Amino acid sequence: MAKAREVPGIDGEVPYATAAARVVRVRAAEVGEKSGGVLNVAEIERVHAMRVATRRLRAALEAFKPCFPKGEFKAALREVKAIADALGERRDRDVAIAALERFASGAAEPERPGIESLIAGFRAEQLEANEELREFVDEARLRALTDRLASLVAAAERKGTKG
Image (cartoon, rainbow, N blue to C red):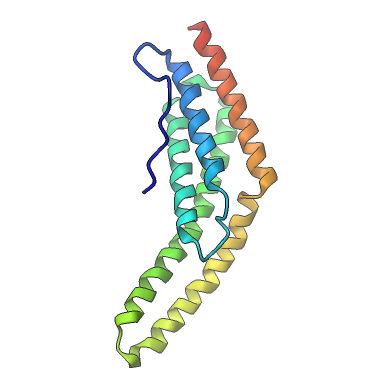
């Protein structure tokens, strides 16, 4: 699994809301960085990397929930969860295909047509999941999420300077 980026400027002296802003800023950037190429079904680790990044972002949002305006927080978290769910649907098919391909490589010849049939079914599901994922990783939609997260970060920064 890819290592999470270091969050600079976090120590015991930093106000909770300031820490929230710094962590969410970094985790949001990771999601954006990992979004490139996720629709390429030949590069399945890209989906995994973005999924891990969304899970880290979700955890950060939930850990720092009190630092964010309620309505904006709920909308951002809902969007992050939706992206993670779509990535998960695609990832499940990627993993199944990879496992079946490994199994097929060592299977006896009479078993291979059945395994290949299973793989073909999962490939069809993979393409369907990929099409559903496409709307979630659309550039405009990701930019809107980035803007929403930037608004949360700004709100937390304001709260951090007051406390």
